Structures are given as structure tokens and as C-alpha cells.
Image (cartoon, rainbow, N blue to C red):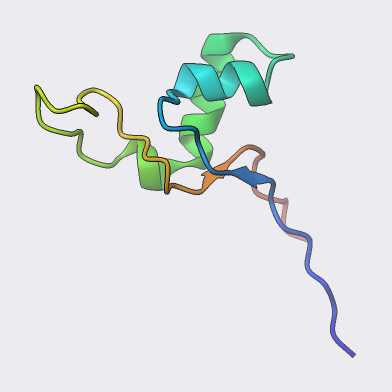
Length: 78
């Protein structure tokens, strides 16, 4: 018999998504600045990624459409 483990909610971002657009869509009940901060803290694998070179299409935005973005915090230890 196997136990199913609950998983955190995730999304794949749209091609032109930013922290702000994800926050507005997925955490619309929160202030945008607060929601962006939460998303960034839950997604350090994206937030801490070096930015694209200036002049490139993705300059200033580390989010890629292939990234798995967590839209809820990690579960508390039980």
C-alpha cells in the first residue's frame, strides 16, 4: 500500500510572465509587493538565477517558461 504525499501547488509561467504578473494572477487576494516577495522566497531557484545579458529578450527577468514556479509555501513539518 502506498501513501500519497501532498504536493505544493505549482505552475509553469507564461512566456512573458514576471513576478508581478504571476502574483496578480495566482495571489490576487494579496498586495502585489507582498505577493511578489512570497513568490520569490518560495522560488529561490529562479529568483537567485543570474539575469540574462542586457539587450537579450529576457534581460531583467529570470523567469523562463520551463521553470516550475511554486505558488504556495512549503508545508510545515509534521
